[in-house]
Image (tube, rainbow, N blue to C red):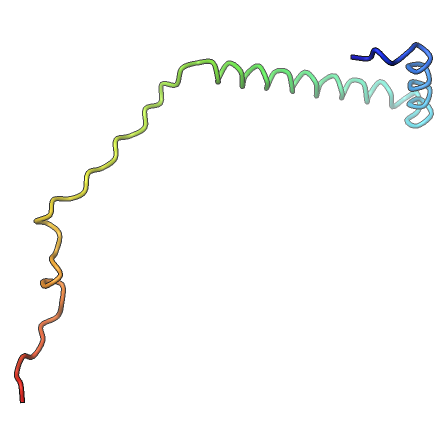
Length: 86
């Protein structure tokens, strides 16, 4: 992973971090980084176990449409009209 980094590169990186954040903040940053990596790994394990377990959730069957006799026809739903002609 870090094949191109030598000991000099790593030491230079640590010195820059020390100058930027100070000696008091580096342990806090390291602890917070360690906790966040641990939480990330735990959530990845949880996701993998959820993906590997067979799903017991069965989707509900679709409801069938109501019978045709219970649906109003077009003629029943129209208002009565006056059929007198002049």
